[in-house]
Image (cartoon, rainbow, N blue to C red; front, side, top):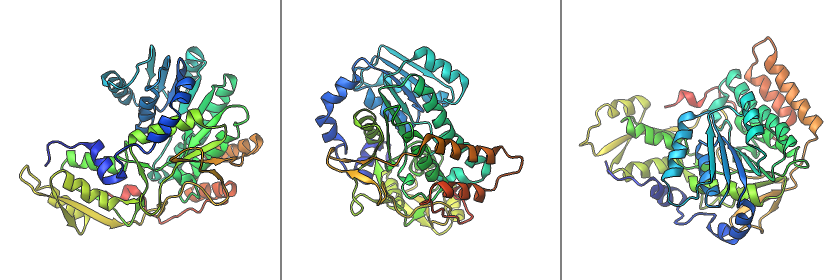
Length: 407
């Protein structure tokens, strides 16, 4: 195994195939505007210990903000975030920086908000992001509670002390969703955009973040560290951005967007889609091994048992995708959405996205809340039907098997 593995270099060479950030030109073009908007400002980042939240903070700290408050339920992640900031030589550490390991839906969060605010910039990255989180009614309720109910609760709080900029992360899976995670994010978009007249709201749909925490590619690192086989689906291609690019997309969207804007990266269907299986093979080779392609999970596990420091090959199992909610392709916008492709070099903007009235939003939330609070156990199909009522383009793919049934 190669003792020196440069993850950033691997992402650049074998996944994005970009030697420079996708956002380099836009960051240069709008640097002064960003600097003017951020210098001396107070910023609140929710979900700041995750990959995208951390990347957003590192992008934010290229500018001289005065105060940074970070909220996340991952206490260890917050500790590592501070270590990362304090150990970096290319960021400007603000005069006030505090982290709090709390849930942004808890009462203590409101106390922190009232005590540390008002904030000029508020960015929310606290969200369920995995398709695997729709395994049953309990996981679906937790997902919708986090992605929709708590987002609505946060906006009600922000109305009392509106920031100059509010950003909430979305996903490409919100465009013509085929899984409940994507549908929950589309509903989240509708919820937050319903406040766009009261609060300057921006969001972004973007590609997979290469090696983000909990992702399939991050799992490759974990499998290697445990001498376990790699495994991934065949025929599934995705758009990818680097962690650094993910933070830069969100920074530009949060500060330079107009209220109601939905940002997305300009990526090409022909040259920018990358298959998971190709990444797996390149990853194994980058570590100094030859891929040993296995015909079953059992064979891969058995071969992994015999790995040693002298091994020259590494077991990998590829399978056909057969799990619920897996979209064979990615899209950032629908045919009915109005686009601005001129303002930024490598970012597109969905303009004038339809806004539901507040009373309609509250009706949706009440309908879902009543279903979850009923005494009867809610079936997954019932939630799908409710979501389809409000999201006509939601075409759920149900195959009776989830990602937790795969390695």
